[in-house]
Image 1 (tube, each protein chain N blue to C red):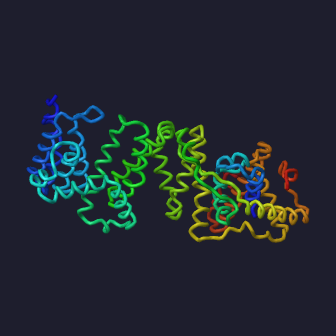
Image 2: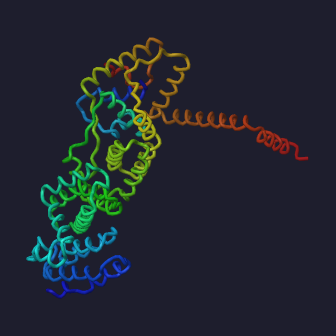
Image 3: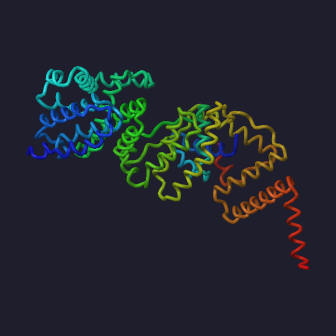
Length: 108
Length: 346
């Protein structure tokens, strides 16, 4: 699992019920917008994340094209937590720590 | 009130377009024009225009699509039976069974089962599945819708949106199947501009952005192209500045598109669920480097970021020079000669 994927999963796990769109995730993570879509597409293929078009009323009220909203699935949330935990255990065991702020603190 | 309706200018202005086509029977077309003119006389469109302008415009769009005399006549006569006292039998007597059948076919398309007929045609998905007679009827229908969309502004907003949605769902795909590309494009742009006015009015050349995105998304499999184009147009629309939009478009093209294309074309299973292999020293170094890049994005320290960037560029250029020079040493020799000459000018 790449670092970026882990970051995306973490953000999605923070608020599992919130629907997010690609650009929103990219802003929240500080990841370049180009990286986020392939990750989301992959996560969607394995069923960890589900996506749907935004409600028609919303985008029509604002008069803009509809957006694609992403949310972590129940199964995905469970498996993502396990996978993240496993990755962290393995890397930590070898004395490798993530130098990102809040990385350890917000762990499950 | 009949003055403008009988305006011969409307006919003469179109005559030139018809004159170039030697295959057309101008007499019949003129007769159809006169009939339409006589029966629509005094009627007006919601826009306030003389009603006759509508059949004439539809006929000229149909002419532009390369249709024959019958189809052009049908276009001129298409609203007579529904909107005037002129009857089907009169039409059959005046213009013969072929044109009368086409008008019947057109009226059938407006009934609920007409939509089903169109869907059936689309399911066939191939131009050959439309028999020639259907093709002609559909050409008139498409031209009719195009002119109606061009002059849709007097309708209530809700009806405009309904028409636009129906056009996108049915008429645009039919135009595509029949190969009327230019008309299809215009129908699509008109409908989308009705459905998404703000985007179309504020983003500056959205038609262009759409076209660019559509072209760029070409490496993706056909099934997912629209989805990603739409998704990115949605994101683009909310970006505040032009710079941000260009940056977004560049990133998406350079990084997202190739990866999505590779993943989806080769049906590659994502590796998210696999356990990572044990960390080896070089992997650890790569991990650190990746973390460095990510922390760049997280905006930890612009100064550090600058240093990392500078270091990266220097290393890359040194490596590049090494690779270039190892292939052919002429460049190196020339460079040493240059340095020597510079040191000892004599």
